[in-house]
Length: 60
Image: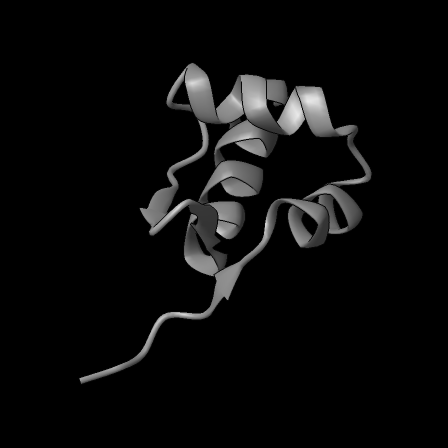
């Protein structure tokens, strides 16, 4: 079993060079998958990679 790396919203903001509200908008619109652990929002690193891949495909 592989353990997925879970990122915080600020880590995703830094990786995607986006603001906090934009990241939360992506989560709300389900374009970026996330989970809630207690009261903390976490985004799997794979979901960030998938989002980038999808966006590159859409731009082409």
